[in-house]
Amino acid sequence: MAGYRNVSTTCVFGLRGVRIALEDEAPDALNVRLTMCSDLPALRQRTRAFLAKEGTEVSTPGAERGAREIQLGHERASASVEDIRGGVQIRVVPDKTSNVASIRNEIEARIARISTDNRCY
Image 1 (cartoon, rainbow, N blue to C red):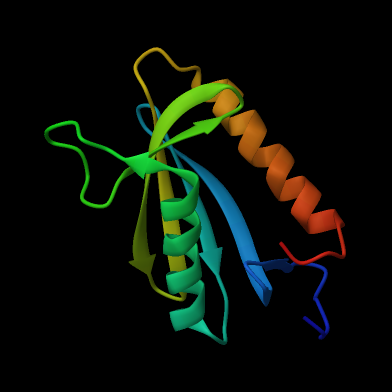
Image 2 (cartoon, rainbow, N blue to C red; image 1 turned 120 degrees about the vertical axis):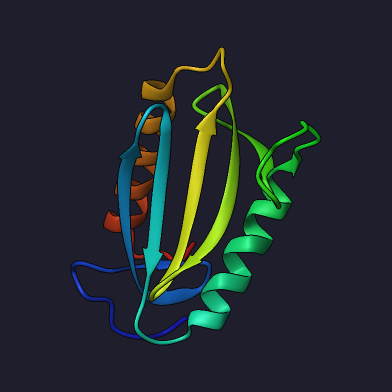
């Protein structure tokens, strides 16, 4: 997709101008925030489609609605998407036996790769 990319933004899901932030959530969860100023409906739809493709539906009682089982950094976790002001938030909750640091490192590596690459993921 053609277009100018600000230094502080990246191209994700074919959408330019996306800002990415990773936040720790106590006790052991991570939030990946994707925000942008333009096409919010497309960002929200494509984020949910990506997670649906990458994960399998969580069948655990009490799991968050729409949560998907995923694997990051060879660790298992569940992930769910919620709309936030200006974008979406992907909440990643490691399984009880998973290492949150390994998952955080994998997410940080992916963000760094996306942020420094001129390709659009």
